[in-house]
Length: 477
Image 1 (spheres, rainbow, N blue to C red):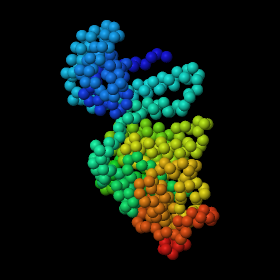
Image 2: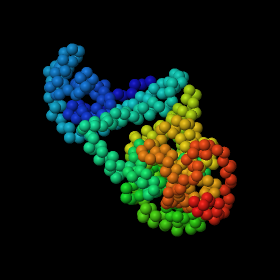
Image 3: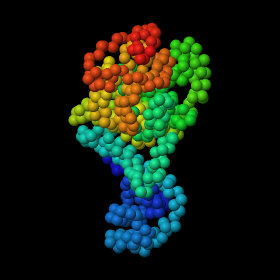
Image 4: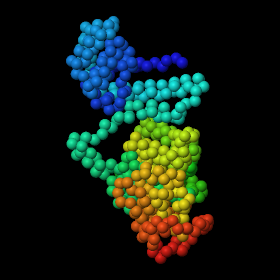
């Protein structure tokens, strides 16, 4: 194959500016890893200077001063016997010392972007070369590109120095907008500062038990005009049209039947509701079940954030089992490990975009019919329980389900008290959920042996809506 062009497509003056910025503002480059390489420079003077600079950094752990750099460059010219004389090297250093570095942030961005593009093109070249040689890729086809996308980001956070950074870090953690509030008062009492960037929140429920409805209600509350933010909603079970329609129904309190009968009236009410209740955007994107990985979602998120200038505070992935793991198809990775891998990748996605990730999932069949889930209730892999930050069971006995009553049980809370019970109601026709009181503990509800006892098989839900109090335990009436 033809070799890819590996030198900067910047002007010689801009390449000189890169070197000047690297000497004067090393912190703007060093934190991003090895994005600067000597072979990227287009002239012999700049290549030798970059090579000398990077060699000094590698040996001594710091960026050389102008004097040290000039001395090292002169010695390099004498040693290699190149066409560049020591006098020319000294003159070159004197020249770039005078280059303005007020645009250092812009220069760093350009250098990082170039390094990322080189890594992506090289990954593509290697893959094409293997295919042309009829060689099977040794890893997932996606992984080299995922690694390429990390160039310029893998060392972006150098960490917190306790003596130096403690005050600023504490103030950051106590900011009222540090996390994202759920919009449900009782849930927000559990997490007073909201769900923080990088958290993975998993609403867990049996199939067809309102996981999507709960997430849609969270999304509309999180996009509020006060302390909310933009929301990305990846619908991998329902399509984006149905997801949008259900959001609009929840916002307006109207049913889909009313939408069909009085379309223009429904559109007007939706517009009013958006203006009154949403100060931020919600973007709904559909991927067919099993067609997208977290890597695909990452690429799409990057694109829309840049295209629409979004300030994303929450990413919903609905739901976990519809997402393809990055090791999908690798026979050496067992199914349960692939499922937990999706959780790990989703959590990393939240850290990368500095937002919380809400990814509902189905409970296993052993949990169906029980009063509440436990750490053993995740479908397919117990390892999932060790990855999530918050696990919320969406619970209902058969009588509660018939009466449109839901209990929300916080069974995992990495950042506070767990085992909280809340009581809510749902109107399935317009996808509205209210959480308005604490749920009393049902006798035996906290005993594992009671939870493991056999439960009656759930009955099929009837078409009509029964009396809300019919069949409920006395304490729930």
